[in-house]
Image (cartoon, rainbow over all chains, first blue to last red; front, side, top):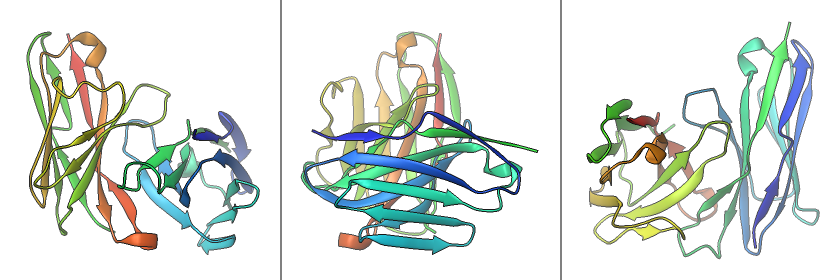
Length: 113
Length: 117
């Protein structure tokens, strides 16, 4: 089956660095995505990893280890506006032919002054 | 990035009525769109995959006769919640598939909040 785990909640201080972990189990791994979702809004795309290693995009970086079924999203120089839910999603090639995304429950990050 | 719109952004209706939600890709063609539902403080649950020119593919447990999907053009998919009940109240979000193969990703619409009284 498919399973994606990430912490439910995290808190951090403005200006700090926070790492949000995600572990997954899937039969046909074909990429991992991170999305940001503010309360009451739709998710916005942050990053995509399909090969092992670190992908850096400004203040956000995402890491993937396929052998460990593990990814993390790293947020640097935290700002208050970064308070949101962060969704880890895995694409599974054995999911009916349309490369569906399987979402984790999301991690709610609260950034404090 | 690609822009996806949804209309309406929110709707309140009486129990037993039907509600139609539109999802449009504004600056690109989308042969495949996805419909999700999200309850408060929960993650997105895929309801169905909408394919232009063919029938939608529904996830297990989702009633196809209750949630009618029509993908009539390359830029428009609609979800109709028929005979809505209070338990159908939720945040409905569509997404459009962009790119091919390893570069494929999904861009989401702004969502439609449905409240059934």
